[in-house]
Length: 156
Image 1 (cartoon, one colour):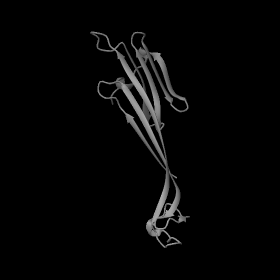
Image 2 (spheres, helix red, strand yellow):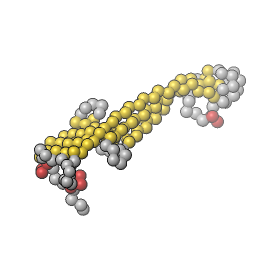
Image 3 (cartoon, helix red, strand yellow):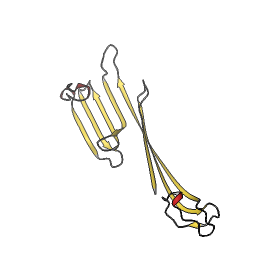
Image 4 (cartoon, one colour):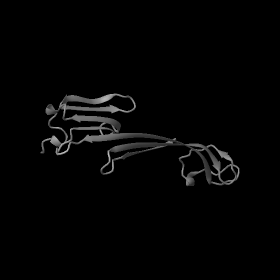
């Protein structure tokens, strides 16, 4: 069986706050091998090159025809983000997001949820596995204690 797996992570367009993750899995199995000239069913390795094919016992042809079974699965995950802005204020009162994101550490798509609440002075972030629900990271702390992360990191 030959397996192909493709993943796409769509980032939001400028001015939009939604994410879409699509995973497409294609499974291909070769069910049967036939002689292309006479239709005789052949028992041979599907990975062999045409030059290495043994001649058909019925007609002597080395041309082959394959019956292939394709199984396609598609998974889609969407996310969103929002900012609660105040007139005359530079920073939003609160920011929130829930989105799929590819984790290079875990080598798969994870769910990231974040809330920055400046009114109640809280920072919350959770990173979890979509399939198992396992929480890889959770942070719930006062906003003034959440220093040295993201854009607030000290430059080298």
